[in-house]
Length: 391
Image 1 (spheres, helix red, strand yellow):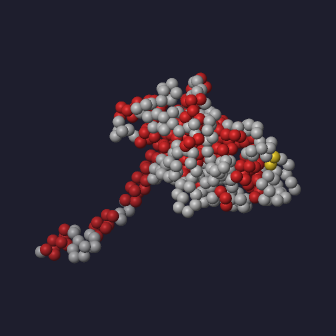
Image 2: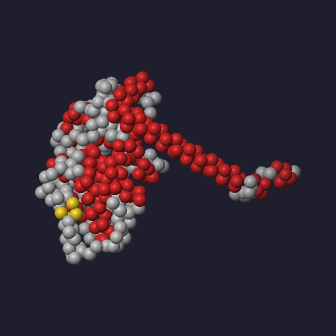
Image 3: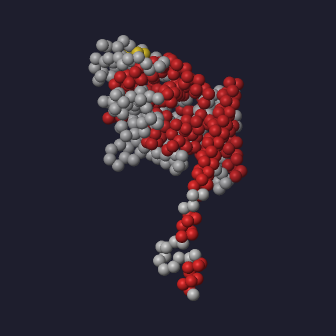
């Protein structure tokens, strides 16, 4: 009777690995595949909808910031990089109204209820306030066992070298970086968040990244960079090919030489881009620069033009032309964009378009070089513009 009961009850007998055929049949039922596919489609549609809404909200807010900046008073020198603040000691409302509101919100909610992203915005150590940078700079350890992480972006490297973000450059969260960029360079929060879009695959799943992750070819680093050698360039070895962490002193001395004492303008940045792209294409057999990278490289130049400015005594140390070979802020450095709500996405887009149009398209035949190893071939460093080519 026991045997009959087991057979009719649908429970496995004997071998524990045996599975009831009816259960097996339900598991592999073809009706489940459309259902599973439908959930995946709904999930993808939900993510797409959220992304579109996020972009619309971000750019709507940014347009408002751009318009408000037209009439809002510019930041004073002591407010460009704020002093130390926290929810217990918020910044003045007149200087940073949004941060003041978030500080009050965190004080009301308390530590346990406050979202982490708010905490990153409401706590600031005041490094660089009033142009005081000298004592915060440290060079990354080198040699065997060195674990500090660096990347091709001079702005991020400088923040790590000054301790604004963790000095080892590891386990950085996106909002942590956005808040640091916002305070260090007086960029609007909308622009600071927008800049993270270029490398979102690195933090999309795990929620953090090491800044060396940005060194992958085609992410931040691209062919034709005027601060990093192409991966296939004969000069690439000193720049640490794996991460493109250190700037190329060869390119710095070509395009930003110490002998040039005049201030750089956007026209100089356009000329540098045009020459460097052609130079890279002519010497790099695997040269690739897609439309997005064109815009990205022009955007980098626009940020340098608007944030760092064109004075060589500030620009050269910031891009790594110093005794350490690493990016740094000299004592007294302050961002040149002084908008009351920070530099907006729209303002950056306008300057990006101006500089890119000034650089022009990369077309025409490859021009010949007499000596590929000549670092200054075809470039007048003292005038910061292209010179005559040597046949």
